[in-house]
Amino acid sequence: MISITAKLMGGSVNIPGENIICCISFFNTSDAANSRNVETLAWASVQIHCLCSTNAKVPYTSKLAQPADVPPLESDTSFVPYKGDMQGQIVLSTKPKILFCDLQLLPGLSKSFVYTEVLPPEAPPSYRGKLVKYSYKISIGAQRVNCPIKLLRIPLRVLAISGLPDYNICEDSEDLSPSNPFLESQSKEHDLGPALQLVQNITARRSPNFYNITNTRGKVGRFCLFKQSYRLGEDIVGTFDFTKCTVPCIQLTVTLQCEEHIAAEYAVNKPEVAVLSYSKHHEVCLHMTHCLLNLPIPMHATPVFVTDLMELKWKLHFEFVTGHPGATDIALSGDIWRAPEFLHIETMIWDLPVQIYPALPSPEPNSQSKHFLIL
Image (tube, rainbow, N blue to C red; front, side, top):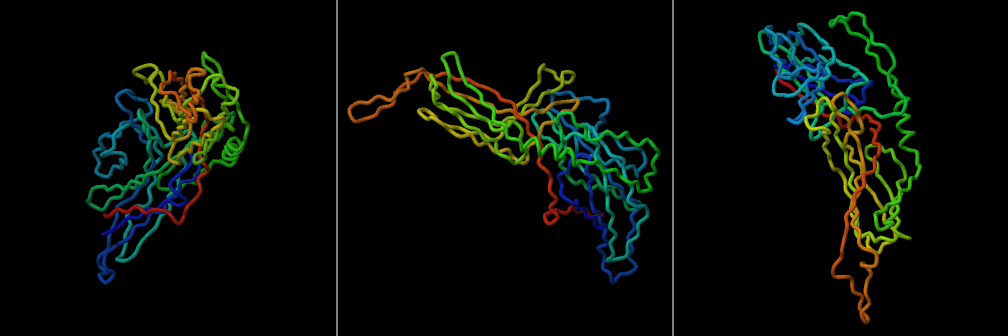
């Protein structure tokens, strides 16, 4: 019996252009005392693929994509890592890399291989939305002699750097020379230093922006947002100023939302937009002069990105409940302060776009999980 152990080196979160490194070990679990029990594997191969799945509102049929439930070839040794229980379209596949052919292991012995791959800069990020989902898997396929192929799938999270002003992560032309899958090729790792430094500079820049909130009756308040660009894990901080206002604000709600905008050629209903809500801030602010906004950006969220199928945008969704001027004043009856029993209110909404970029992935060698498969 042979066990396969796979471990991602440097973490399971990667950026296109980085080296993805996976250590794969094959171990003969038979008793070492039985020296005649030699296990043989015919071959093993590794490939990374990105699966795109959509709901009925988005009939995605990209020319570059192929169905995930494509039947295997007639040969019993064909390596189709995306076949089986997965549904959707394959939008990105790396070239399969063969680890070995005809590997023999004595009882108690193991053999390890290091698999490296670089995703292209245009690779879509991992995303789980209402209309569209992108997911990545590292598929390790192995086959014993005269036995069916078995697959070990490792989930991978990809964060794309998108929306940077006038910056191209990779301008090099692709290598068109023929390649041999049996020979190890030197994978080219793109220089992400300038891109990551630009993200850090953009998100660290503090330039307060002030917005006057008004309706038909007058000024409701003034909102200050300290910066427009953020990274995953940061807090969106702002302040509301209700001094010198003519319209009382009774309460407000601010929600961090992302919008899925489906491209026109794939949308059944135009425009096709889905909204996902994350953190929310609620404040009863009647008779307050100032209040603070603090919205955390979850680390599991997906930053802004654009593909041929969709575009993801982020915004702050504001809901203000306002009253009539003078109708919210507290009445004094003797020694008792009385609030008004009834209020005539109006609701107004406002959307403010914000930019969210990926956080710098940091390797965590001590917290890597291992994935196992028994042949």
